[in-house]
Length: 400
Image (cartoon, rainbow, N blue to C red; front, side):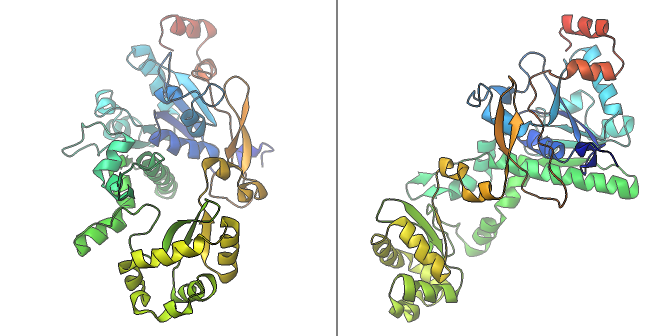
């Protein structure tokens, strides 16, 4: 067995070539890189992936790009130039997986659609991340995260009585990236078991559609969609955040009758409510949420947040403070479980990054550096057999 820890990672020996940008495809390939795959990220000469310029908050680098691109090799190629396309073909010939989330129709026009690639590289797993699918009436329509949040109805479910709201993270991109990642892993397993390389296709719309299935079922069979009620839950009560006496919000949730009785008797100090017909069943509590909220709000107003959470913990009712992002960064669970690792970014600075959520026993994820645009171009071309003079000529011609 190799002494190199990277060689012992689950995807060591797997090569991924990705023409990717923004969030969804980079999120999928970063997770492959964390597991040991070699990920060659093909970027435009000059600016590269436009996500590099979303912001400059991480020591001059984009917070999005730093999150999504650790452990990758950046190669710049002009894919409109014949020499650039030839280099891409050489990279694909040695790859196991190809991932792309180009604009609608662009991959097909370049001969990089799944069927064309299968003809040239029968062992290559091609993964396409699109907005609304590669066929159908919206195949040519551009899709960005918030547009897809709107199209799936998610925005209409998020917010409160004063208005709808977007989810505060790129949830459609994240959903698509997760399904692309799991789809690629499934395709790699299938290829290993059967010898057949199967293409993977994921759309942002269909990925997020899966995630809104519960309110979809509720709406189809209930005749109306769940209401927007802020931190509260449309079908469970009590479930929501209440301001404590010190101004901090505390969220609690009651999931069963034992918890309901404990809440009434030991937190609210209202044992009479256990048998109150207004609150006798979960559905009754939802129907009479407003009256129940009055009782809860009054009790929380008597306690500081820490006192309320301590009492709820002691009686076995799930609760949480409503953290800010700064609170999350200092969360004791992340610290105590050793979830942070330093990752290098362009310029030599190291920043903390979270380990991947799925722990594999005996395996430490490869938390590689975030590449500068085109940082690995010369090394990759040299490995393909290009001489230094050839590389210089390609750079002079703006091919790389």
